[in-house]
Image (cartoon, rainbow, N blue to C red):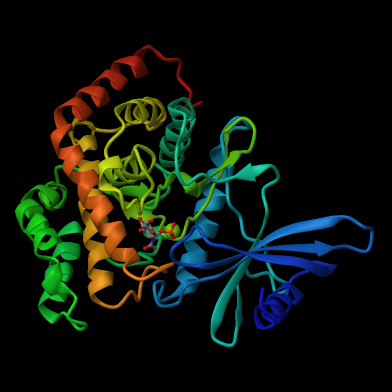
Length: 375
Ligand code: GN1
Ligand code: MG
């Protein structure tokens, strides 16, 4: 870790009632947006304090105060309703002034405790662990079902407005600031071909046929901290985009990540596709915990996975064309590779769509037979 960053981390920690000296600091690289550091303090009693110190990405989140307001609201609400058996959700510490973020030199920082024995996974090897992940995200949504939406800000306007995302993509292709679009004819044709499919959920929302709910909006499998030995969900993290959204987006984004037969940026596209066993396990967990969905929402769950996969592909590719300003990249053409991987995954989902719908319906039948877990 370079000295400049360590000095900065020290400045942040000093603003909290956290005694001790920093003895190690490492950067965590799996998120694409915020800057995240695992910092260990040595206290005078010889004990260690393990912290996550995070710099909020100001380019992505124009008003970090709104993000932190939402996280507090959601945290209070969930903690008031959840039972001991439920997975936890992340809480940020208040600083010495009693605020859950700290502004230094125009940048917004926040600190939470490292959850003991926790790990995150970028790839799911054993489909069995997915039931509980599905359950955790479904339950998260159920617990938030009675939080009045007006209490939350829209931290990124039109975040999952797929129609706007695709329009923005086509505009970026027109603009083509770096001359990258000329090599992307096949990819661009993919979005042209599937625009009407990918905007069906927008149409249903506009027509008032499906409701907005408080949703997580970024339900990657690595946004649940898992127990390192048992793979049980310990804590839902990354609440930056919790705001009004569609239930199908949370389901779909989780499927996009956890039921891919490969990692999100796999370059060997032969390896990329939808793993139906993973899909089934996650769906069973999600549908048994996410209560109160309407028939139209249930019918649109599989479409949610296709929609969010196409949407993210368009976001990655738009960012590639725009010079990689939004998603952090680890090498040249990384966003292009991510986009191609998501396109391949979406194509496979489109082929398996009927089977995906069937599995959602089978999961409902099992839910009715399952014991009530909400109370
Ligand atoms: C970003 O923050 P992170 O890395 O968990 C992005 C999500 C994408 C995801 C793709 C605020 O999530 O929308 O699905 O990358 N978050 C934001 O991995 O844009
Ligand atoms: Mg995120």
